[in-house]
Image 1 (cartoon, rainbow, N blue to C red):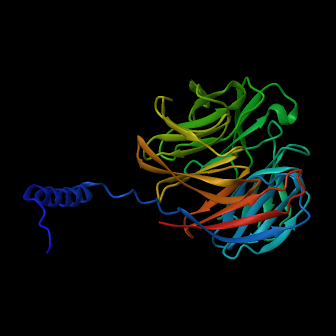
Image 2: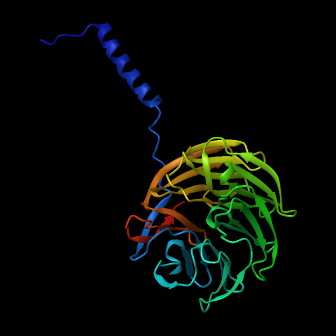
Image 3: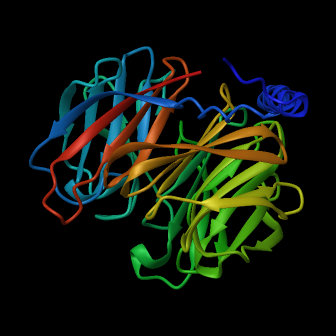
Length: 351
């Protein structure tokens, strides 16, 4: 003969079951892991290289990718779509930064070694066909395509000088319009407004950002980088008026207001970051570091950013170029002095 449960016990069981169902419905679903921003595409190994790679330039029409092999005293040319290594171009001492002028098929190359002059390479013959005279040892460049003016930082510690200079040049004729002095032996990357008159310079030796008027070639503001030291790489989103500064002591990515210099937010960045790239299509920031991964940060709006999952790269992979037309990122893995095999890495940029 079966035993009946007391009425109160039955009611308690039913109430508990209903409450459990309600709680399950009310509980928020676990947050989905953000989708990866980059997908590894390929790796082209470059045996026999030593030292550091620096910056890139792309020739879209000619399907070429150029890389400055600063520690190897060469320029390297690759197939832009396949990544295949095409050739080495010798005779350039410590090339650092590159600008490709498609309308004249010329490659402009800054040098931190040899005579310190900026060289002009013919894109058809790969021969040096000219040079620009300025304070020696130019490194980072920025190009104003509307005004056809090239800006490069020169002098400083590379040339054993206590001061650095911002050089303004016509890259077609080599005319030097003038040079702006910085009382610092190290100046890092620079970016410029395409639709305005300002140019921003990482004055690494003073741990500050300088704002330069392009029309007068004069400093109109200086902003201290208070959160960290050794501010070297720099990128810019002109639409939202935000600067992206990477520092090395400690390794941070700082988001600055380009009108006031105020820090909007900051994140931990890869160690040894040598380049920051802004993806205008997907509204992301890529920070390339030497410890083997890429830091990725999503720009939600001008004041809100989200750190996305890290993307594995390779040790020494600290400079790169974003090719928006192909939705591809190329990264150079420098061998340094470690004996590692140098490589060109490629990634598909995912939406």
